Amino acid sequence: MEKSEHPKTEMKILALDTSSSVASVAILDKNILMGEYSINSKKKHSQILMLMVKELLKNLDISPEDIDLYAVTSGPGSFTGLRIGITAVKAMAYAVKKPVIAVPSLEALAYNLPLWEGLVCPIMDARNNQVYTALYKWKGNFLEAVTECKGIAVQELILLIMDNMKDNNKVAFVGDGVEVHRQYIAEQLGNKAVFTPANLMLVRASSVALAAAAKYSRGEIETAFELVPFYLRKSQAERVLEKNNKGENEEVCDKV
Image: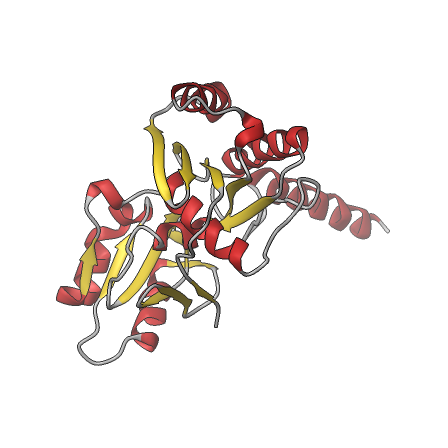
């Protein structure tokens, strides 16, 4: 089981998140949050993300060369959003020849709830009654992955939680899937379900930065060329293309 901690670091870390409807940018310096911008709107990440980065750097009087480590959520999440965030980090890190770290979106969400004694269950809405999810457990300053990241139906999620829940244990839910499935979860788990307040509900770039610092301490570093998105399922366009290709192949077989 993977463990993470909050290591002391002398680095400046610039972290991004574009895995959902939120665009978030943060800078940590020596484990101190220097600044963070988060916008949850219908504007496209491609239009606002680099403006947010530029404004944050300007206000903190920091240049891209001053950043020691670039971090970004790698998925799961919005296919388009992930590509925008990852492309931005790859370009910035490559330009200044600095290392990068990919942080799973679900792990970043779990970092919103440090020191919680029960299970942490990040859920991201995957539509069609599906969620991206995983279970985590804090042990002091260490975050332990109880399960791997999954793309499952919300009904399966309840079974997964019950299989991993101990007596008198509670589970805290965080992520944009909470509002979509809150009523069903509450009906199934009753008072064992705890829902995170609005200020901690969505991915924050500051949490991405903390997770990245822990990964850096374990040597989990990548180059800009190695950074790629982490998908739990194929995009809608890919699924449609496969379906169309399958239909064409079946038609050819019928004719033969």
